[in-house]
Length: 398
Ligand code: AMP
Image (cartoon, rainbow, N blue to C red; front, side, top):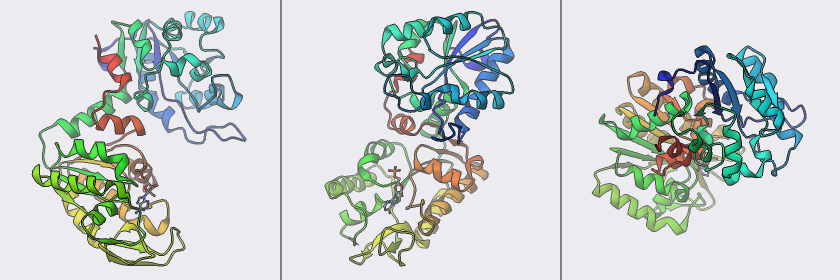
């Protein structure tokens, strides 16, 4: 498989699957966050600079298999043109005859955007006939949509078979794959994983997988209270999954057997209601009174976690340390984000992998102070769990 840097797109029409599933204002139909478009620019520019042309395809929102104006990719044409610095063409049906006319006559340096792929039921079904038609738009297929790489859709997976010798990853996916590889498969040590977020149940697969790899496992966020209860602590009204107490105990045992240093919070900020207006106190995490719930980690935990993070060479972070959406309970997550940034500055490699920790790093303006912030929430979690992602497998398969 060719690497994008080594591929010459001169005189080729590249069919590029991007993730332009951007948020759109319901009233004005304007793009409210253009991050995903910006992230696709390096791949598009490389193709154009080589002397190739680009046919872009994506989904947007969740249309019900038929065209709907609010989900039309036409709404984002102005934004792509602005960011790319040139006009682009638009085809209002991805597999209509006019679309094929346009792609057939694309000249070097030109860009065509196809209408929302999910206006066709074949896209989500991974339909081979739909994929075959789409494939006619290009001489080479580039997948740069990491956010949908865990879906076996027509444009992300099925289509790759029509380009047996000319299929490759764009820069964005390449970086996502490299960063996971760097964190989980390199020999540098210590490797620290920080796992937070609401529930043990949604992170159990990744935690189990990480126990085979990491030197330190830091657990914070809502899921920590299930561990504390499993160890016999009083957690008051904190979030808990009683069905997972045994699981928590097995994780503690397995960590010991595998020589993984498991770090749980020592103290916590408790609140008398789930609200930013709540009364708060700081207590030991295993001594929370009835009627109170732990919503963030407190200073002793922060200090302990920071020490581990600052001594790490590789860091993976998934999930916040507390209810960071509320001002009163965001300090724990913020301090951990700052520690990860500081460790990175000292030479560690840090991957912020998926979901709310990505939102947190952005909220504290630290995205450019860590090594890599993943663009694919669910896809990144599945990839870290070691599941093969259909969109990635389809390119790797010869
Ligand atoms: P996840 O999507 O599993 O990573 O969970 C993220 C969510 O967990 C965020 O919305 C946080 O507000 C929430 N969360 C973090 N800590 C707590 C906590 N102590 N109690 C309740 N929810 C929490």
